[in-house]
Image (cartoon, rainbow, N blue to C red; front, side, top):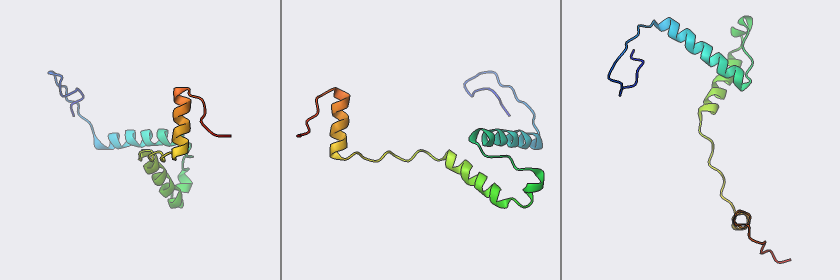
Amino acid sequence: MNLRPETDPETEYVAFDRPRVLRVLARIIADLDELAGVPPLADEEKGQAEGAEARRIRHRQRLAEPEPPPRRLSMREGRAALQVLLDLPSSEKG
């Protein structure tokens, strides 16, 4: 595994073992779950908590999805936003 950018003329290869990489990734996932507010699974709950693990997976996938596009403003809302942005007086008839 090369840890340097491709543009770097020097290369440095580092040996790694798959189980260790998987342990590190599991710790990273646990840290991200903790930051997201997902409670950790206890060892005794792991066997019967398939639903909790499925919720965690859905939660992670939802966090990885891009934000939905903002809804379009109506003509009235767009006009009002422009008036505020340009610091123009309101044109509403009252």
